[in-house]
Length: 282
Image 1: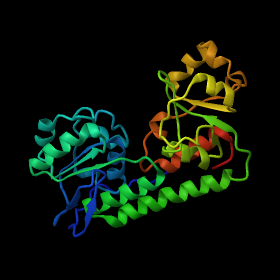
Image 2 (image 1 turned 180 degrees about the vertical axis):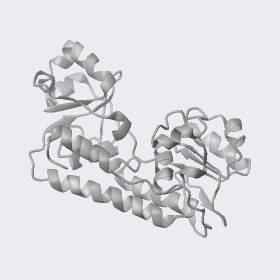
Image 3 (image 1 turned 90 degrees about the vertical axis):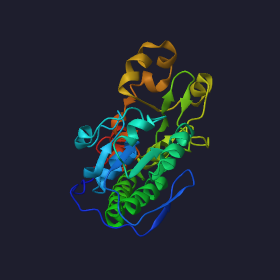
Image 4 (image 1 turned 90 degrees about the horizontal axis):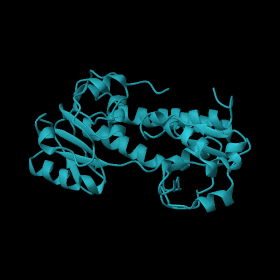
């Protein structure tokens, strides 16, 4: 478990520059005191590096840590209400780097608000974005400590599962159309670290579209699912025809943990390892 850095630290001065995932460069002479984070992952990271007390806005989906729930809810993170964001008088806004948010980023910058957009598709992106947030908030040391802590946990989980048999794993991300976890997603990396072998790891997209017939042909040892989807899969004759379901290997993942590529990535890998290899890690 990654400890949360204290949230009452006095912001330091920022003397460095960093680029976001829209290609925009930010620099400032003073660390921001009023931050809006419209991305659950960056909200978790800001708390982890000690900037949580400076948050004045978040999305509806930012539920961790518990202290994040006390931050004003500004709605969804995609295509946000720019007027509502500006009403919080932010001196930094962090967005999810989706094309849906490009217009909001332009409007916020036009209003004079420093704005950064990030996305985490791979574990390496987590480290890069954490360091960038450390620069923007004025505490690179806390950012480095967060990265080191997560990497340490990932390494320990990987070491514990490396010599174990690696079952083949299918992780559906959506049903209609059927989307798999591909190698372009950090979830593929988590499967490998946890001691599994992603049957669609050869596909470069984060969430490639597949057919059920191809899934049947590949016949995975394990199917990972969300708590909400489990009963639906068990009630569907097509899904029940999969060997993994017949063998009782439809495993439920904690989606509140594994679908947030933030400071709990190590804990997410550990939770998957315990599903695939019970008792393999402490």
